[in-house]
Image (tube, helix red, strand yellow):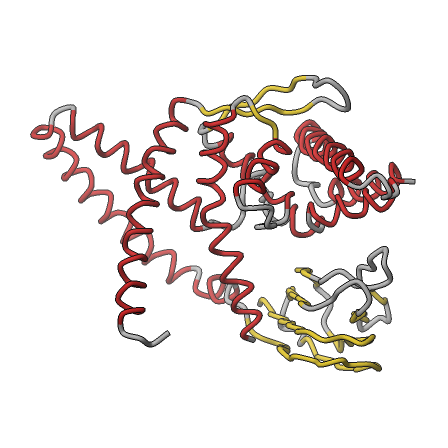
Length: 122
Length: 248
């Protein structure tokens, strides 16, 4: 049960910030395709597998339907055509507000953990 | 052969996206195929000794099971589950709109906004009350009821373990979630599910090195009666977590 809980915790935590991670990387690397995003996120996390690679596609689909990203198909140097993403003006606004929200959550969590560590109950 | 592995995997994904239009399905599958082709090329470049089949298996494993991927495409082609991130983005967007509205003229806007807000909230509360009263049975039907649960750690376990659970006919569907954590290149726990009609569903995913990949499956069934789960252990050390929830 502990493993189950921890696995769910990790999934929720990663899944919760994955939307924001994708917006950040699309903003930085646009136009960028799904595989390129996975590579960038894996490199940023030191090669650690944070999530199953396929899970980003339903999220990209949602971001596109919400009007936060737009896409176009283009042929690369080799292989099949790829779908390239970039942020819309609304997406950039959401990214800015999302980052502010993340900073707020992170600062709150840091403060809570600081108090917890100071209490010596680790 | 590697092409066959890829085609089989994507066919499985395609079958589970039946609620999308053919064009939407083609777009989703096309995007996934491009990803998997790139991944296979990258794996082969990183390890030239790897066979193309092994690279295809590793690429599809890293991508996730068809269940894991497709469960997030909702019946309308959107996302079913509202994650924290999605909520965060929506809150952020709403926050942005509110800030913009404030900047345009606080006084007059605030008065009308407050009035509209009060009317909307009142109407919503009345509607919600009516919905709860009228659809009481349906709402209760959305609440899952635990039929079977298992959460155990095994140490170097061998042999077979048979368990079963009864699904009362009062449930129109039930969901089985199974997770295993701890399998490596040689150890394995095979999981077989047998329906009341005797249909056997093998949930194990064998790795090229003779072990098994960890399981993470969510399956939905509608057949009441006695279901059996058989666990075949092969030097397995790790967790097995299973939850079966019924829906009325």
